[in-house]
Image (cartoon, rainbow, N blue to C red):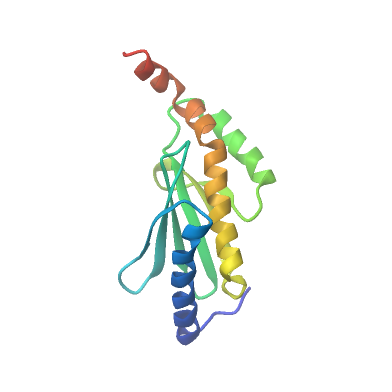
Length: 157
């Protein structure tokens, strides 16, 4: 287990992360960066996409880890077993992130780093990996999970 960081060290890292996040616009299609209000050290980074209009990445800094995650899609309406199998198979190839089932059976993409490993390069890698993975697989996942709804909408039903 990694060591817990004290308040002063976390405050310093909190400040660095905020600065690094605002600098990401040079390498990623960043639409917005916001810091959560209150005691929780949490940010969101909203990225413009092609296949998914926006990908919002949430980062939460704890005493031991920086957790990063994004919502991918709601619970599948059809072909759930196939979708989950595809996600598990994708997990085998992913580095630093994994697909998971979250609130209301929605699909998320998540990962975390030990606080001591957090630096600008790792932050860029983590957010870039979430963004690229969602862009790469979103259209296929939506087609599998909601294909008949999409076809009905396209056919004007």
